[in-house]
Length: 99
Ligand SMILES: [Zn+2]
Figure 1 (cartoon, protein in one colour):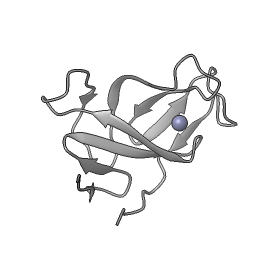
Figure 2: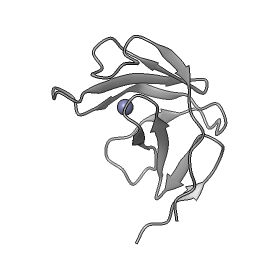
Figure 3: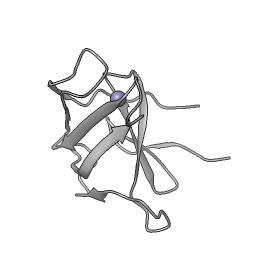
Figure 4: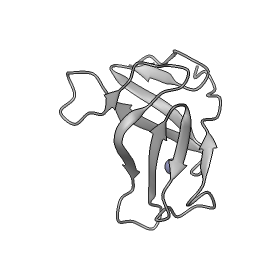
């Protein structure tokens, strides 16, 4: 059982993994930052306006591909996303607390 903690308006955290609600895919995307994770992102520590690097690739190479940069509380979708927000930059949406 893993516990999700709402650490700010826009992020949940569980086990060294932050989750943002992707407004393109309409579901949570994980960003591993804890040192226990082999592959991890650099996180600037700003919970309200997070910046992660490098880019976030979800379903890479598949038809539901989502590719973005998360910077300063915004998510910048690259043009190779499958969804309608491809090529756009939007604010991270508020996350729902999970039960
Ligand atoms: Zn997405």
